[in-house]
Length: 122
Image (cartoon, rainbow, N blue to C red; front, side, top):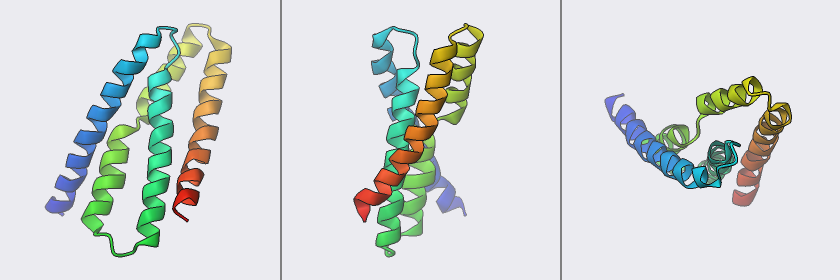
């Protein structure tokens, strides 16, 4: 159990740092829309789809590596809490169309990205 937690923690560390760096790059757009979180979440959905498909297809991948990549890396990389906070800020600031667009785009494209990731591996 401790070994699994360490694998997840290491993956989470890498995923969190990558998310932060991408968010810094995307803040340069300066238009107020949370592009960084949207891109990170969509990339994370695609990645977890690819990884999930790879793990299913190649049953010989170690359990610890699967935890490192999916729960750790993808879990640390994507961020539903930040998505929710940014959506609420859009709503509170009266940006109703951006609020609806952000939620719809994140959810619909997120699900499609997971499906695409699984399809790529098949």
